[in-house]
Length: 419
Image (cartoon, rainbow, N blue to C red):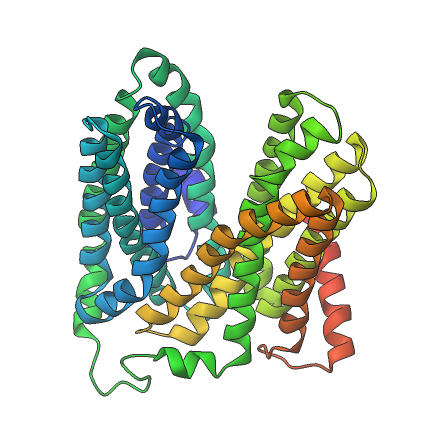
């Protein structure tokens, strides 16, 4: 175990391992409770729209509170906000397990969304602060890998648990969050002390404003890439792909599971090599490669509506999405510097905005025209983000045509490393 930790984290600061462990604990708990939430809402005798509102309340409050959380992080520091956010989600989840009405469940899930925003903004902000520019890609890849591994593990526990009691997963989720919060408070003390000891007259400004960040093309490109990735994940993979498999490919739900497993597997395979490439070759080529691969997956779904095209698309999308988990976040770290809570919060909001709008818009397009049209639209969103990335500056600034070739070379390298 120690040898594996040394191989994965190497010269990275200790806080990267702590935050990755916290991410794993949080994701395991969420994976346990997520499949049960719709069933628990239906337990109160409400319709499908009300069930959807319970899921949307969490996402909406997470989105609405993000900028305020970013200001709070700048004011009091990441460690306290992180632990408080985890505590809020833990308490609201335990109370949700005790809910006796639909309204109680709805309100408590909304409160949980605020806590989730506090955790995610502060955790990413701290991660990007404690590592150097040449470590950000690897660090984000390991952090996201913790989320991914936990998200895969959680449902395996949650299924049998829900069969025993529909309320039990909420209490287990609260317990995993308490573990995560304890690990964060103990393991991140050094980072908190380092923040307090930073000199006020350091070369870098104590706080990076959102207005300053928006003036930078690389930051705008990172926002667009995160929005496009959220759109594709929630609007297509999570919403349209299951229906597409059943209604257009005329396959059973088992094939939906196979597709999701392929995406998760390739996503995990791409995170660490993608992080290394971000640190070694720069942020822009990896971000462009992620957009190209994800857009190519959408084109495959639109032009090859058969099981072979579906499998190939899921493989491509897994790699592309993995690259988009690391490169844009590394750019945000470059822009935010030591004090950029609102900069990180706006980045998260872009991804959440894509996750909220993608299912609605892509679903409406599929209903109005066809699945293929929705896939082409999503490919266009991803290609647009890729075009912004091509035009954005990086550590080196080759001519535009050289940037495309650089991105294509990176795409080939990523595919080779994850094969």
